[in-house]
Length: 534
Ligand code: NOJ
Image (cartoon, rainbow, N blue to C red; front, side, top):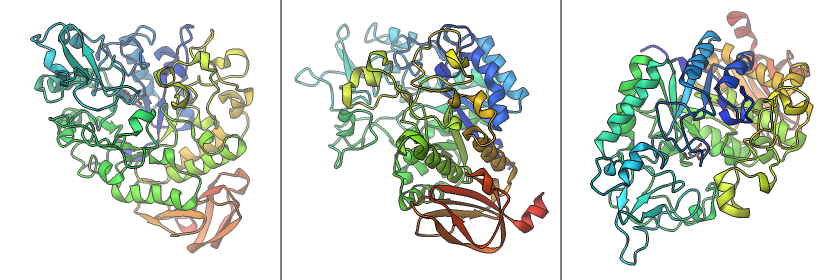
């Protein structure tokens, strides 16, 4: 077997609506993306994941798909997708697109047909049930976006299931026609040259056939976006037997194209998540989201990384930010402190087996943008009220150049920039060798060049203390996640600092021990391997 292309890759998430507006309507689009791909190439990333661009009524900003084989005009055309694919390939990058197989938009032709009558040929594409005896929903499941997971269709007298908005009806994956449809959808995009798929809510496609009530959660789950969703244990609506068979089938479809299947498996129990990638016969990779919930505490950080890396070797995509959660800089305390911690965390992720992903703007050290309530766009914010964890703040537009509009586009963007300054832009940071964007670039490049970081075994170095460190062959990653300066022992030999969060410390040699300032991280290279590997 040849080594898959993603083994040595660094990924980058493009949240399309907020990346670059090519046609001046305030919404990021494919033309804008194409013209800004050079930034990704300059940064050194290998694979771009772009969020959904399909026709959609945008109730959930594109995660409500009305046609899987076309493009929403606000984002461009099929020809624009081709142009993005071509430009990516020209720049030596790959393109992964977002696939949303758990649910469609209620505007999708399948759902329009399905709800027209109980005996319509598409009825069984979705999950319908009679009302409970009291006329209420068939069970107690709740939507991730608040309220019951069921909505009554007055005309046909049955409820449809939706784990998200009522306008995002869940597909019925027990129906073989649904599986056939998706085989064709995968091929449609692979034939156009895309290199793989990020699979939305990949753990939820199969539901328990009896649809039993979910039991109350013992200790409310702190990762749910809404309080109601946090109150139930997700025992029967996600992570059901059979879901992996879908990816086993897809694997056969993508393999002739060397296509990547990257799941959004939103399970924070690594042992359950690992089942999706362990045998490498279904998904190639899954995102691991628990780092998005970790406190700034060395033991917690070591645990969330080490445990996962051991449970799912080579099968994880590592992130510390995304379009669904508060940005790492904000979570880690904001300001300079938050920025320093986020860079340390990025350093730790960059050396692990699997694929690290950077979320757009992370490389600029952005915190969440401030979005006034009256400008809220996220359905979570609109429906959830003050306790909901709005996703608008992490979705504010990219900052390319100084000055009005920040080079994003020529008109007021769909979300405000959120209190930014010229120093936050790509252009200003590119002129400053000490800036965050240069630190990220150095990190990404090192990840690419050090083959140890693609294939050498992973060995954790200290079981306790403020320094979180691991070694992969002749490369060592160490981070002081404590509040004091600390010296940690080094393995035998001379170690040269090839990357430091503080650029001034790069190039120095260390023997026997490594002294790290608080919130400082380094990637060190064994001196003899420097000579051997060049
Ligand atoms: C996960 C996506 O990342 C999120 O943005 C979306 O709202 C849900 N899945 C529903 O599709």
